[in-house]
Amino acid sequence: MNKKKVLLLALLASLASLVQAQNDSLRSIVDEVIWVVGDEAILKSDVESLRLQGQQEGLRWDGDPDCSIPEQIAVQKLYLNQAITDSIEVTDSEISNGVEQYIEQMISAIGSREKLEEYHKKNMSQIRAELRESFRERQMVQGMQQKLTKDISVSPAEVRRYFKDLPQDSIPFVPTEVEVQIITMQPRIEQEEINRVKEELRDYTDRINKGQSSFQTLARLYSEDPGSARRGGEMDFIGRGMLDPAFANVAFSLTDPKKVSKIVESEFGFHIIQLIDKRGEKIKVRHILRKPVVSDEAIKTAMSRLDSVATAIRTGVAPEILGGHFKGTFTFEDGVVLFSDDKDTRNNNGLMANVTQEGRTSRFRMSDLPSEVAKTIDGMEVGSVSTPFQMINERGKTVCAIVKLKNRREGHKATITEDFQIMKNVVTAKQREKKLHEWVVNRIKSTYVRLNERYRDCQFKYEGWVK
Image 1 (spheres, rainbow, N blue to C red):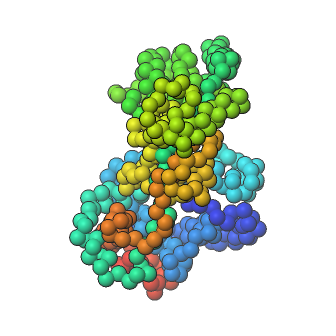
Image 2 (cartoon, one colour; image 1 turned 135 degrees about the vertical axis):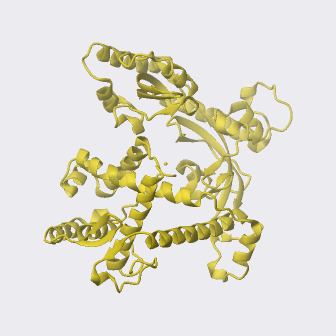
């Protein structure tokens, strides 16, 4: 979801008394229509609700909030109406993932689910239901904005012209960036532990087949896939190419929604799967994921092997575990080829890749690295190799790793020669903002708008509201 943006709750934990007072104040307001945009009414309570949300989340409004808040609501309605007309779609999984991420942030800020329910005076189901529509509309608006600006392109000449006469203090600052190579080893999982996980899944299947429990209930209780467990193991419609091959082979072979699949092993762990529906080349299933637990002894063994590899790289002498079958100076790249289990970096000499909306690069800001990697390379010299450390990879598995700091570029003012993409992004964002501003102004001209008299003297961001 990079695509799944949510507002951060910076001040939530300290606002309980303030929010209660404002809620009491809201209840005393006699609601009224303050703006009409097309056939959509904006109520005074809409404005007060958004103002309250902004206070909860530490937001600051441009200009007078009494003017900027209703204008923001009006602009959102323009985008939303056009998104509906253009059939901009938002999937259930996008909405669910956004809502759950937002809820987790609120829980983290306030302390617990119970406190969150008490704070809102609603249970979790009610909170989720209220958030779903808000997130659906937000995603539709973002989709509409992306559609309006998808054809924007910026040439190198335009970038140079933009920055040529820009004051020095307006040139963007590029934080420290690093390039990191990594070797990872997955500790060996004991067969006894694998058997234990499989037996659990067989028990779930037996309980489902006997009607003692539903697949959805067991998924909520026991599945270790956080994204789908909350939805009873349900995944959104998805194509074969987006799934682990082993998982896809079993899922697409299912024909009876009442049957539970055999146990299947994927790169994430072990699953049982149940068919929900098929539509052409896409499938909708629910699943239960269980992950074998890695023993302390297995981790210790992997860390010891990696320690030998790291020592060999530092000295250039091949590790004893190769049995003397290696000739020449032993390098980090040799270690990647011979020992790394990370398929994403093995074919690139272990170099980690940072995939962003702007593309793929080997450069990372420290905040974009996995936390364990960032902590390890902090203070390392360029070219040095770390001691082994333990981390959870993006597939949720425990791995052991060593890293080499390949390059570090200290924070600096952006330059065309070294940071063209960053500077291009700045110009692209400016053109995108201009395109969206022009679109809103043109929509205002062709849309019926009526404002309460007290808003007619506001200094608005977009011209044309007052007719």
